[in-house]
Length: 181
Image 1 (tube, rainbow, N blue to C red):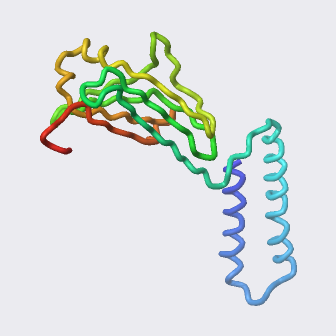
Image 2: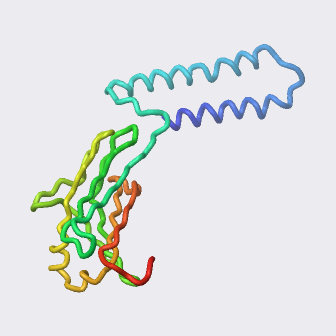
Image 3: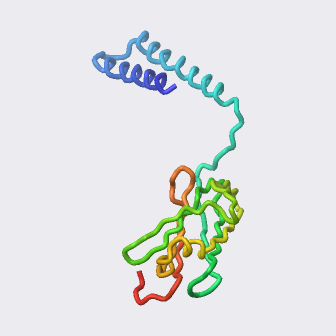
């Protein structure tokens, strides 16, 4: 289809380039100039209608991506659980990829992909517009994996869609620090 379109554009450019050397319009040249693009336009619409046999949902002209992320702690300092809430406030549905949990020290970052909870995997997740998704993150399992993670003061969650586009992020402090970063 793209080849057909480029061919019609090249023929139109050809008509304009060689039509500049002539003085005054000639009738047969004008007829050829008008008749050449007409079959290509008709073929374009025929192929377009042939490809539209499947029913597709109509996407809005301006797609608004409004994902809000909230992280709640069960305690102010050294929480055992983080509750992640993702709300799709946009005007179209989104496929969420696995959330990325980043535990952040000043110079060291540890990244973990969250697959689910209670030994259940439910990512990638299809989140419809206006719906909310909640995930409870057990921090003790990360601390059991590596004891040094308990000293990391900041946790950040980044959410991507399945195509790799970053939808949003949110961070919380897990313990007191002397430095704000």
